[in-house]
Length: 372
Image 1 (tube, rainbow, N blue to C red):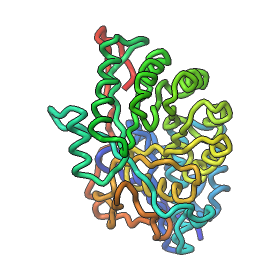
Image 2: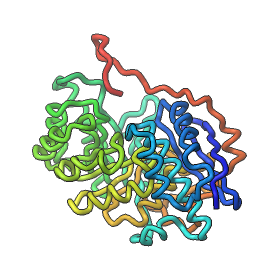
Image 3: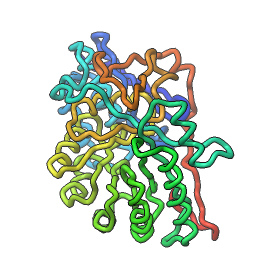
Image 4: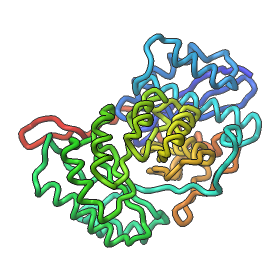
């Protein structure tokens, strides 16, 4: 079997899909994208085509090493996201060619169903308490995440911190003790702010506090983890096992969050998870992307013992022939071959996007650009 063609599709709202064809008619789908840099990532994907077209798609580790090491410069969001989408598609091809799910090729499933969580999204005029009540009525999720953190500088006023904590307390009261709630600081805060927030959130038992500081500062993560009983999570902006190595070895967090469309793909996430497992660290894959990334993440979750919960923003009703279904907070482990999905290519072509989504720009009151 040989790879014959790579085809990319920009689709609404901000996603990039990849279809890899072979000379035996077996195809695979992946999702290689950097949010806000989809056009750049698409170019990188087709540059990787020079390495993999004509090769056997079943030699996944070999092709991964060729793509990763072959260009001299390694890592970074664009290259690793391009590699991630290609790698997902290669696993899809291998699974389809053998008529088994990807997780069966990675040791088999360790669970029967996969817990997923939703993002809290308030409607206009709706406060956090009303939002969680509505979502609990309308959805089947038992875990939610949202980001109450505003644009912040190096320190924050009492009023800003009070509002974050009070909002979380309201949501906890409305949700009750059986619903898990995670808080996402989105890298907007410094360690000083995040420590204050986390300590005051302790009575409300967050599932975790995500990105309390920007990625790359392991010492800061250790300081925060040591200062609070709230589990700390990070990893959506880290790439490869080498990018996670220090955070895991230093036991700086309780949860790592590799994104399977950024970190290097399914098998790379599995390697990251294995290293985390040895330090009693849980894995909750990041996925604010499309249904192909979610499908890859579910394959990973099915076979990963230290998996915690899976982020998602779509169940695939737009582009999958059979969307995923949440039942009492869980998605059943997929049983179809490869990634376990059938992409509706007609809908993919109809959902064309120009690929120019921009990251929102956030500013402080004095005009200083800050983190989104």
